[in-house]
Image (cartoon, rainbow, N blue to C red):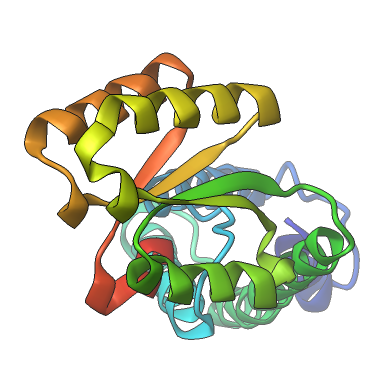
Length: 220
């Protein structure tokens, strides 16, 4: 909206007549198109761990289709001939403002989480090998907002899975755990189902580790 009004002011020198000279309909189309595209791309969903490349790819897709739809409206659908300088200037401003807003918000959240706020309590269920890389990640990157409470060494408890599950259940409830990270290679299909059922019943998120690609867990 800021880019729209600045573009209008840049062309006409004031905001007078905005409603009466066909720009209000374009303003409505601007906002409706933006809402639809950002909803499809989940633009307002801020992932705790997201690469800058993935972030810019997402924004580039939104901006590309946004510009295409606006141009189609201005050049073929609307009966009013909007100046090309208006749309180009508004596109330029949007291309600057949106990335700045997105990056500022993400880095502000990282600082906020690094201060100890807006974090998620997590546990890891795995072996020494499978859990080390992930636990190191949690401990060395507080800006992502993960607080590792405990690592359950499942490899030493495979003979008594139900005892392990009871320990996990009690610990999760007592410490208000939000997420469980589990090495699925250590368990049977039936045991995995038991873990998933517990997580669903207690509204916990559960993610399964792949030893050779641990960090892919965090990609959106």
